[in-house]
Image 1 (cartoon, rainbow, N blue to C red):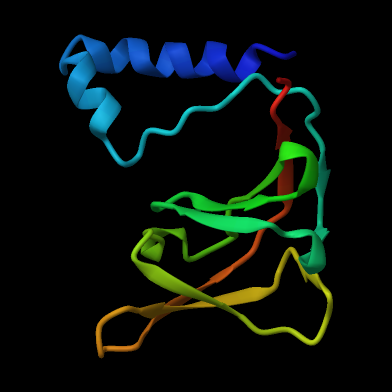
Image 2 (cartoon, helix red, strand yellow):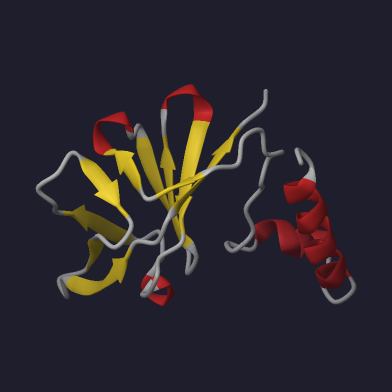
Length: 130
């Protein structure tokens, strides 16, 4: 199970290499490295006080880094098409937990302000085995 992520990634890249150079593939913003999966679990909620950092993955989802190099990836139920790393994420809820179904708003860095919202899906955990 540890190498499933890399195996799937290599199959996906095999189709890209024939039409593009490896250098171009490495510079695409959509490409992310998925380390071997140590533990694969899902949950509907994560604790906000455990979140060390977040990263928006363009048009895909949000990565939440937790203690011990554990990362929860959330692929939204809807709204992922607005996601890009130039947006400011605004989380407003009255709870110490972030859960599937919660709405996250995004603001543009320009004076335009509000960009859109997403509805969170379930969280899938990945941990670096190193």
